[in-house]
Length: 133
Image 1 (spheres, rainbow, N blue to C red):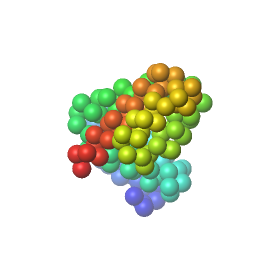
Image 2 (image 1 turned 90 degrees about the vertical axis):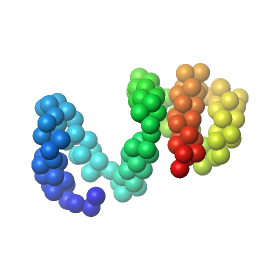
Image 3 (image 1 turned 120 degrees about the horizontal axis):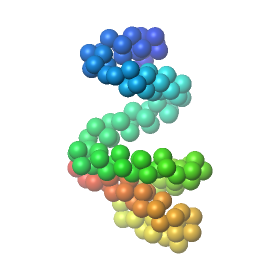
C-alpha cells in the first residue's frame, strides 16, 4: 500500500490477471490506480475499508450493492452528495435507529422515495454484513 506510484503501476502491469484483460479494462484500472494515488490518506483508508467490506459480501449481496451503486450514479451530483452526507451522519447508529431515521419526516422531506430506498438498501447490506461478523 505504501509503494511509490511507479512501483504500483509496474506491479499492476506484471499481474497475470491484468495481462488477460482487454485494453479498455486495463485503462480503467490504470485510471483507478491514478485516482487512488491522488486521494488523501483518510480517503484511501475509507476506500480500503469499503473494498474490504465488499469482499465479505455474498454474491447476491454484491449484486445488490452493484445495483444500488448504479442507481446512485444515475442521480444528479448534488443529490449523491446529500445522500453520502446523510449516510455518514447515520454511520454509527444502531440498525434500528438508522431505519427510524430513514423513515423520519426530516428524511422524507429531504429525499425522494427512490433516494431513501437506495439508502435503506445500503443500510441493510451494511447491517447484514455486521451481523455476520
